[in-house]
Image (tube, rainbow, N blue to C red):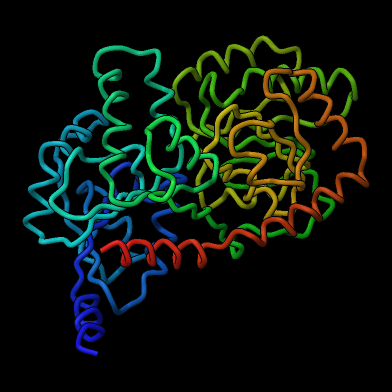
Length: 387
């Protein structure tokens, strides 16, 4: 009985730090992950503290108004911040007397050592692959990442695919990794009624329907926009349908190559780049699409798949990485290296309206397996039980 009471008392006094660096103030997929976890931290129990950039001080105030926020690292930039985690983070953790520190973006920001217990979520191993062919500091980071991940006391992977990569690339024991899939906010992403309007108005944009959507940062080659543009051209030539292609996302590495491909397309007038698209308006953009195409050759989870399915929009995606694990039987698949194969699936979804409706139905069924409540509960259980 005394032992049980000691455990209860200790749990109440537990101090846990949460690293918000690399979460971009909630305005990214990683940011949405952190926001949804913070909203579901119970009002009593462990004492959680956030730390990150000074300009993000108020970014999490709505999701976690009662949590203390500590601003650190005055130098901006990814590499300066990575160095801060190596040199300064241990001092902060020791001074705050944390029992545990949680790294929601452990694949992007991670210390090499910690004075307290650590748990990290790995959303993908893209940083390791990104650095593979690069040199100098980037190569150094690539070598350190597996070692830093091995130093975590426990790891949360967002898919079985990511878990297997952690085992194969970083040499981490399977027993150390828990798989906790991301969730979806069904109060934001849901099937909206469709009227007869030919234009979807989302200030400051207007999108003429029907359109094919791919919502992702514009990055070449991993996001595979160039082949999608080629496949869209084949789709237009075969069907003569009035569909447009909407590419929603901020420019990233290799974006100029994608825009060159669009400019060279015979159907360039039907290809629309939105640039950075506000997260708050993303559900409306999804719900107005005739179909969502996800050609990415690498995804750790496939958030776009879940967002599209929750919006009641049929999905066709690459048979690559975690995408089949996320979508299962609710999507049509293609070879991401074949524009012809990609175009075939687009033609099928556009022409076969019975199949279009069936994919929509299966997607709505599949998305019920993903819940932020379940994700947050399991994540907090892992964090607190690790101490």
